[in-house]
Image 1 (cartoon, one colour):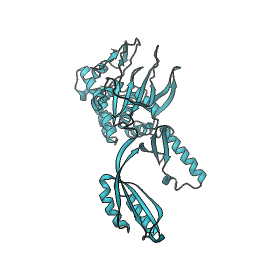
Image 2 (cartoon, rainbow, N blue to C red):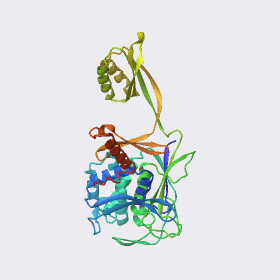
Image 3 (tube, helix red, strand yellow):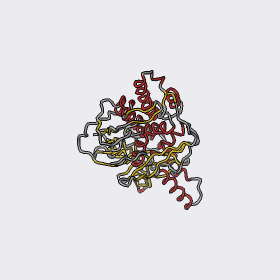
Image 4 (tube, rainbow, N blue to C red):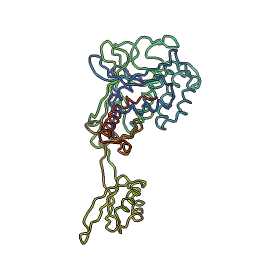
Length: 400
């Protein structure tokens, strides 16, 4: 069974609520979001941040976009948005996700207004904050590639919403077009509960990730949750989207197969062996190289070496061992291993490795990036600062 994500739309769903819920659960996602937004070159006056939020009932997070450069409404053609995303140099998965979400929005608007998709001009969705909401969702989806997605019944909402086309009934026509076939309920709350961006995210998840409103089957372990608040205040309940992340004992942590290579050397100088092991460490498929001193025959000091390697690369690495070292034989076997979810981010030019442990996320700065810093106290201070920023999702690293 796969890990799964459940979207609990207590208050509804919008682009900013979707981003806020995941950032509440995993703040380091902000690093990737800021990087992607920077590539879109939306202007120096654009600032994105998360803010702790409480409505007096529950505590969570808000995702806030500030655009100091814009005071007038946006009217952006779909073709312009598409070209901008395609030429931004985004990672392939993020680019495909963003284009997919916007494409669904364009198709829905075209159907509602009886025009061709390439003739669609976005108004509210064409604003900078909405484009960033879509891009944030694209980054989040790219960070969760192997999950099952589930969704509860959606709140209907009621009344009207003011748009560039005038007053429209709720749910908005584009939302109705995007979410045909989905289950809704009327909880008595008025106003817009599902925005077009939120509906497009749901539609994209259904189309590409198999999102379902059917109850999950099987035993699951709740691993994490996140609460993302919207900007409105509802009368009878919290205006939030809750994300629940579930896992199973079979998939947390991840398991795979590797090859373990072992050999001993007693007739190669330490200096030459060090160079040889460095060459092996940089070989394709090699995961780790360790060595330790041992006593060989006749009490001679020797070195025992262990190399972890991806199974498909074991033959080529064994061949290279015979080229680089003086050993006459290599022992090898396949083993299973369990590994935690890991990723690498960059903060202020320094590399930081993040690990998703059962107790939460941990961060470790790459020590090679501290080589130029003089003094233990200075290195410790910088390392703590960089790791703290990484854990917070880079909120102090706001360069756009």
